[in-house]
Amino acid sequence: MPAPRTIVFVVYEGMQLVELAGPMDVFGFVNAVTEKPLYRLVTASPQGRPIKADGGLTLSVEHSLQELAASPEEIDTLLVVGGWINGPVSAEVVRELPALARKSRRVTSVCSGALLLAAAGLLDGYRATTHWGTTDLLARTYPRVTVEPDRIYVHDRNRWTSAGVSAGIDLGLALVEDDHGRELAQEIARAFVVYTRRAGGQAQFSAQMRAQPARTPAIRAVQQWLPDHLTDDLAVSALAARAGMSERHFARAFRLETGTTPAAFVEDLRMEAARRLLESTELTITAIARAVGYRHGETLHRVFTRRLATTPERYRQHFAPGVVTDPDNRLPVKSSR
View 1: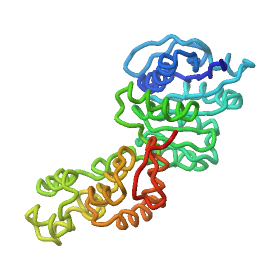
View 2: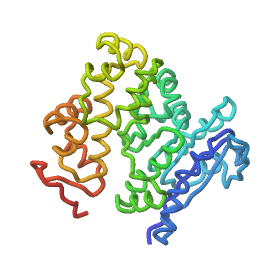
View 3: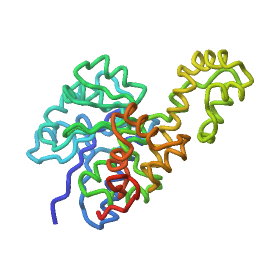
View 4: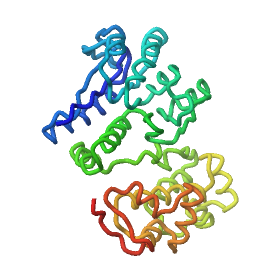
């Protein structure tokens, strides 16, 4: 039996408990499901001190960062959790990260943990993400990092960074898939009552959350009505009539109050729905196009290419678990894997 992969969780005062517990439970559940010690889970803090998580819970810690950095033992995965970062504690963590990273096969973070990796110079020249509330700070403070703000997680060579809170579970599942394959990762996802493994390229926010809610009740009502009526006539004139406004006034007010145009908002919703169907169903591209309000599969193909620089077929091949399509994309079939 191969030796367990050592996962070192870097923790510190003010960390977010869920950003430790989420990925830790994913790896722990792999051991339970397979009945094999595939992962060895280790916590480490500055000086090995017990740490008080955000919310007040105090946790004991197995090792100090300094001890692990000086140890000859190799680390499979270094995972820096997120939390409320403060000066003195951050400096202690950042100081030890380069030595820990040099002996780690891959270096990862959840949420604002990316800021600590960046401060240590470990994300220079890499693509990365973090919690939506700190992406601007990451980009502004560390210009050598290519920040991708609208991502659940980003994998660039041996660097893996994720958004915040529940995205730590997505990161953990992605790492399990990288280590042991999609089937085991999907089994763990089902056990965690996760509807489907969210792909890293998915947005941190839904289209509705990205757009500001309109102040005008009639426009806000249209926003709320739209996701369940994607196959209706959603031309600006039809939406304006639904809001009881002139087309010109509706279009201007919608953009002013939501930060996007009605057409762009509808396209966001249709793209989001199409991506979900590509990830979770075996419907043909034509059927998906019609389900989200496009008359022809070619229209969905054009929108996908313009918005994501890929085709619906390639998106499905990359993100849909166990589903591939024939070259003409007529008949979805199950993968033999």
